[in-house]
Structure formats: structure tokens, C-alpha cells
Image (cartoon, rainbow, N blue to C red; front, top):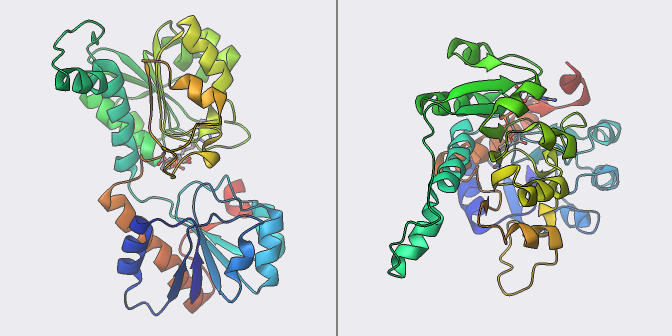
Amino acid sequence: MRITVFSTKPYDRHFLNAASDGAGHRLTYLEARLSPETCDLAAGSDAVCAFVNDDIDADVLERLAAKGIRLLVLRAAGFNNVDLEAAKRSGITIGRVPAYSPHAVAEHAVALILTLNRKTHRAYNRVREGNFSLDGLLGFDLAGKTVGVVGTGKIGEVMCRIMSGFGCRVIAYDVQENPNCLAMGVTYVPVEELLSSSDIISLHCPLTPATQHLINEASLQRMKRGVMLINTSRGAVIDTQAVLMGLKDGIIGSLGLDVYEEEDDLFFEDLSGRFIDDDVFARLLTFPNVLITGHQAFFTHEAMTNIAETTIANVTSFEQTGQVVHEVSTEKIAR
Ligand code: NAD
């Protein structure tokens, strides 16, 4: 199939070239994001491949369908950026990569926890400057602390396992209990109890209408003073303005983000020669107890290999059978 691949970086091309070798597809790589302004670049293709911050709304889907495109494959697990009803109306099948490495994301969440707690990012700079003072580097033992995991699917389950290994008490909130988590001793509690009992809260639920701004002004009032909040799920699960106030008030003791509500205008690009035109983000960067990474939790060799191989498998399957291996559809979500 002829596939136009949007939002690509050199590393995407490397892994997709390796995965598509011998599959008989023709891939055209574009750096541009998929949006109403760029979707015409897919003309002449049979399929489109997109990424997390591409704008896959009704307008884009209708225009892709008008060009004869019947398949859109996401190089991601999350599909909150796709208008699924519009895809159905337009006759476009949506494929995704539901599981590529839950370890990659959970391990990154743990990296954020360890760095924020033991301040290794600050120690690294200090020691390089010959400053061996320990002032401001005080951490706490993870063993014995209560970790609240919101969303115990594939990534949340790995997170529970790792934090149990540190000797933490792991509690969880999910709309559906995971038997593997129950088996490892995780206790499911209502979200209110998770918020009020946790020393560390880590978010691993998808972004849906139910989870949008799950962490808001009201939920902050329930949290333990000095709680550590970690978000590697999707930016809008957190109301960033409310969290900013929580940091100022000291309710949030430390904040680790790999995702941000308005990340579309920032992440995945080198903006180091420009100023950051986002006052909330810029304010967050002024806190010594805030650590932000630019949506890199998925970025391991294993995950990139799996993403590329599953993406190509979705395309090959669609070409041969008319169905992708991993479909996202309104019916499947409703089930
Ligand atoms: P998953 O589908 O396996 O698990 C999600 C879990 O969230 C499920 O157990 C589900 O029941 C639960 N959930 C759904 N609605 C909920 C609600 N209202 N309240 C509480 N729990 C709810 O997904 P996963 O593979 O574990 O991924 C989780 C999320 O992580 C993805 O949706 C994606 O947004 C994010 N993610 C981020 C990165 C990154 O690089 N930062 C990479 C991959 C995935």
C-alpha cells in the first residue's frame, strides 16, 4: 500500500523502514503534522499513518476519505485525538498499537518519581560545578509509602508491580479491577480515598470525557499535603492551572509530567532558539520541584520496534483482509 506517514522524525523512519522491509508497502515520510492544513499532502495514498498530537477531526477524515483513503493507522495506543464517529461516517478504518511496551512508560514514571524524590537532576549539576552541598537534596524512603495508581491497565499493572517491589503499599482506582493487580496485593479504593491516602499518585488512565481534569481544584483539596503527582497518561487528565495553584499552596510537594494539556505547540520540536509562548508551562518550569519531560515515556528501543512492527502489521492485514489487527471503533470502545 502507499502510506503517507505524518509527524515523522529520523527515529520514526529508522524503525518503520526496518519493520516494512519486504512488506511491499511504499512509505512517504512527512515531518508535518496531520491537520486540516496538511491533509491534502496525502493525495495519492491508500493509507495514512499518524501520531499522538495529529489533529484527526471530522474535517480531516472527510477530506482523506474524499481522496480515497480508507485506512488511518496510529503509531500510538491513545486515540483521544481521533473523531471516531466521523471516521465511521467517512468509512475510514482506524488502527492503533494497543500495547507496545507498558514497561517503557511505567519505568519512565518511576524515573520521574526517583528523580523528584532524590533530586538527582540537581545533584548532577551541582557536582559538575564542584558543589557537594546536600542542602535541598533531602528525599524520603519509598519503602512503606502509599502509592495510588489511577488506571490499572497494561501500564498501570507494571507500575503497581514495580512500586510493590520498592516495598510500597499500592492502592488503585479503576472502573474495572485487574485480577493481576489484585493477585499482587493491590487494594482497589474509591478515587476519593486514593487521593486522600496516597503519598505518590501516578496517572495511567486514558483521556476520556470521564477522566478529563480528573485532577482538579476539588480533588487537590483531598490530597495529602506534599503529595507527589506523576502524569505519564495524557495532559488533560490534569487541570494544569489548578495544579499550578496546588504547587504554590504546597499541597503538591512535587510534580512529574511527561504530558501536558497544551503540548501540541511544544513537544517533539527543538524550540531552544525561541521563547516559550505558554505562560502556564513557563511558570511550571520555574519550580525546582517540577520535572517535565517532552512525551518521551514510550521512547525505548523495544517500544519503537513494536510500534513500527504493529503499525506495518495493521496495514498489511488491512491490505489482505480488509481489517486491521488492532481496530479502534466506536462499537469496540462501547463494549
Ligand atoms: P489500558 O487501556 O491498558 O489501561 C487503561 C486503564 O484505565 C484500564 O484499566 C481502564 O479500565 C482504566 N480507565 C478507563 N477509564 C477510567 C476512569 N474513568 N477512571 C479510572 N480508570 C479508568 O491502557 P495503557 O496501555 O495502560 O495506557 C494508559 C494510557 O497511557 C493511554 O491511554 C495513553 O493515554 C497513555 N500513554 C502514554 C504514553 C507516553 O509516552 N507518555 C505512552 C503510551 C500510553
